[in-house]
Length: 252
Image (cartoon, rainbow, N blue to C red; front, side, top):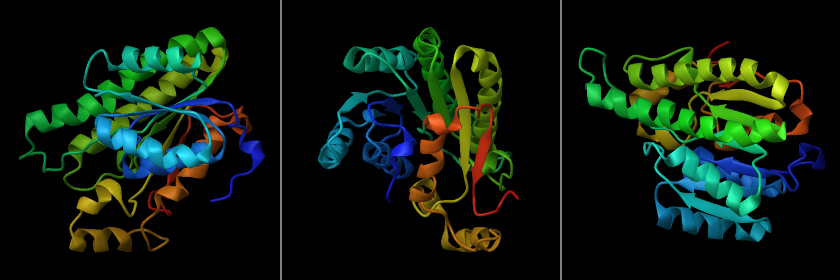
């Protein structure tokens, strides 16, 4: 993927959660190719260290912070580490997420709680911590990774879809609260991608899902990257409070 200089990421500091997942890896590579300094977070120290080594040839500073977002101290810990390592945060990409599918009548309450602990409370804790230095600096971009499921959930997605719908509400409210303080907050809502969580879907269900997508195929992580780079860049200076669907027309 060739990125042009107008992406404006050269020298910027980007904090990315869920960096070792399918989409997280593509996002990290996209930002690194665009010249950003990266602060990557994930739960597994070994996997995170190996991925940072893979990105080394990109020639940009890469820092890692091992953290579990379900830890109440994770938000302050990640932001504190990023500020200590780089001095500032220009963009925060909240990509980490989990899911637990099941019919509402059969869904275990602990599964619902775990999904919301990561997808909502963990993301909120980090957003809350990062907004303070961004507002003080009067600049910053936040990009939240939601899902097309927030607007068009399938059977069995009560936990996941509700967590993403909550994130989208947080995006809109926060955008209104910070628009006059130099901070922009947006979201992207990918549809089914050809890796990551979608890989858990049974073949029959996958075929049915693809049949419902107007473009007739699953998306690729690399197809989400340009929109996230745009939202993190000066090119989107008048864009805030929006959720950008990247789903092959599924929610059209």
